[in-house]
Amino acid sequence: MIYLKTDEEIELMRISNQLVAKTLGEVAKAIKPGVSTLELDKIAETFIRDNGGTPGFLNYQGFPNTLCTSVNEQVVHGIPNDNPLNEGDIVSVDCGVLINEFYGDSAYTFPIGEVAPEVKALLDATKESLYKGIEQAIENNRLGDVGNAIQTYSEERGYSVVREMVGHGIGKNLHEAPEVANYGRKGNGTKLKSGMVIAIEPMINLGKRQIVQDDDGWTIKTIDSKVSAHYEHTVAVRKGKADILSSFKFVEEVLHLQSEK
Ligand code: MG
Ligand code: MG
Image (tube, rainbow, N blue to C red; front, top):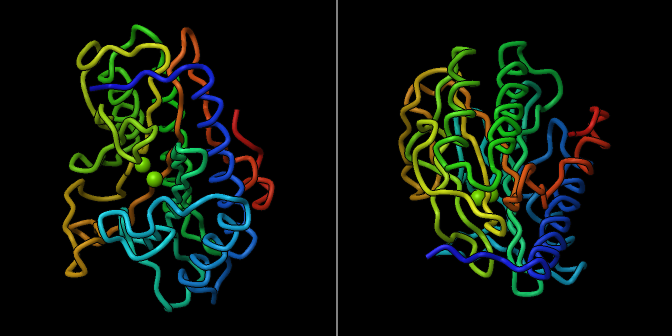
């Protein structure tokens, strides 16, 4: 069952996702060599609560924290801990918020100081693959068009696409139908309708696409221990152009990057 959102509900979801965006901006201000992912988690939790929201991931199916922080070969669902981040690391920071009965969900992979050129290239390509997918998230396209755009862009550059973990519908539930794969065939899959709200979240690996789950029961890692990148936006499907409800603006102001389109 796919819930189509009304215009009013989409505006509420924009509020949820803008709080996620601002939370990621607060994380961006603190991220540097020596800081731990648990410190980032506390910053995020405090900021969300101070702004009237509830952390969306905390206690979700037993997840222990506000952020998922996935370092280097960790793909997604990493648990914040006391270990300091080191120069040259990358960390995917994934944040969910519940406010006004609707969830927001977005993720950004941060470089810690200077990272190797091949790692920087993976980050840039993964973020761009997300926008390639978003371009296809329009009325009357199909989910396969979204996945195919991400897959084609990534594989042409020699990267591999994680298959087992996918994006999702989102609304009053953090995870709703449909599943949004980051691979697929053009013209295949569920037809997109205006009012569908989906989280698109490519997970792109420098090496092999296969993943394994850590003994902690949460963390997903690459099988070959090469690095993986992850970016996520929540978008509303519309005619002609998707409406991006989350934003990297606050993060990229801090990182002094030219912001998204
Ligand atoms: Mg997420
Ligand atoms: Mg998500």
